[in-house]
Image 1 (cartoon, rainbow, N blue to C red):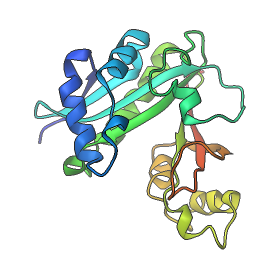
Image 2: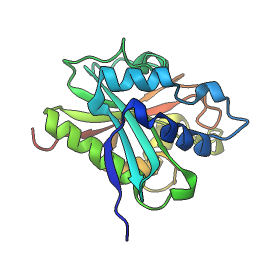
Image 3: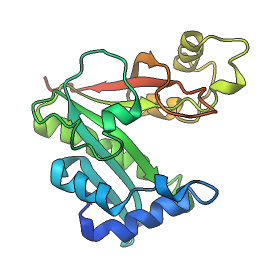
Image 4: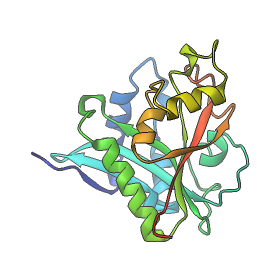
Length: 206
């Protein structure tokens, strides 16, 4: 069985990264929301440790992008924390937390442990850099199915308890992440009703 290789991506990987985005977000998804060459260049020059891709049989099958922040508990949007996807203005070299702004896997390769391998690599980056945590704003795409009956906090608790399965949050919980706070208006997202849940994995070596 082939093994998944996770490594830093460079600008030379742009076409492979773009292929992942195209397969994961086909039309009518707006093409201008795929990573641009300028954004990939900004990632690898601003914080190369946070720019990761996964390969299987020499095919780029997934990617993950992160930056450093100093976590203060204040609400924020994806655009704010990611610098509209460029990370140059929002990355804090003295930050205490690795913040994931993107993770994408080719649909044809899902179910092979690729996302899990990328999360493990992120955890290893946290340990290597001596950071307090990994964190991310987590979509809750099944919330629209329950919103008439459950407020957002009740929904998150129900997912935590395993009473409700959420496509993204349940996966995050399986990766060892735990909810920190609910953030309204995080990202335009009809399924999540524009909510996200900030989740964290704490560095157990500190």
